[in-house]
Image (cartoon, rainbow, N blue to C red):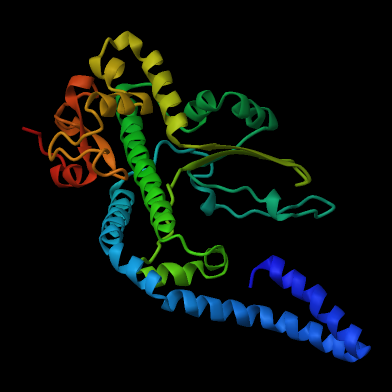
Amino acid sequence: MSIPIFIALLIAVPSIVIFFTHSIWLTLISLALVIAAYPVVRVIRKKIYFGSKRFQTLKSEIAAVIAEHNDVVSYVMEIRAKGSFELGASPTGRYAHLASFENTSSWNNRRDRNVAEYAPHVHNASLQVVRSASAGPIKYLMKYFSIKADLSTLADVQRVADDISRLEGAVANVRAREAAITARIDPPAFILKHYQREFWNQIGIRLLPIAVPYPQYKFQYTSAGGNSSQTTRIALNTPTLEALSATLVEKIRWTQSAAGQRALMTTRLREQIKARDGYRCRQCGISLTSEPHLLLEVDHIIPVSRGGLSTPENLQTLCWRCNRSKGAKISR
């Protein structure tokens, strides 16, 4: 029962009952019956839909798509498990556990937010630092979280950026596949609204909560009495990592290092490599033309661990299956 029909019945049924019976009690009972019938009718409609021949046929046809979807979900979890998403830390509070804290102010105004949070990604600072970090996040991220302008740090930034970028692409691919599956089966709106979990269970997919684990860096200030608290948050996502990479390259330009100048895997460079290769896997030949939801990745022909650079001539487009099987091997 759709909402417009339900509203129409709420108006029509009591009106008809009171017109013919002139009984307020019967009118109220009829109104209660209409309200009670709404969820019952919805459950009946759900059972009819899931038991229909159309749904069962579509469920069978989509089995192969579901298998591919689950493989990509597994790959996403694999990237997340193996990836490293740590970069820099704040030294403040490193040994905070060795001390005890007591608010000895005369008014004893102790609040939870007056107790500082000590963690590698948290820097407790003055109000001016917190506000300045909001205006210049890269500068203050480097200054207060020990991110040095050297080639070793640049390599770490590239490593984290690569893991984050791959995971972003894979998660986006999974969501696109889910949308395509939903559109292909085209369930009624009330099914997706009220029975979405049961819908996916019927289809055969156990949807796992997948998200990119962006490290969150915080600059926070709390006044002496705990009455004022301000925080600047910096998420280590792809735009932040690319800005950090560009800043590091600018600062270490004097080294005249090929790695420092050229080894930057930006989103723009990845897209250029995919376009150059015609959005086709250079190993197995599969392309977006034949598989619209194909997950393509940009791979180092000579791995970075073996001295390879992030230069166009050392980069190639691979589908996720080929890249997964290649690992740290050198492409032939």
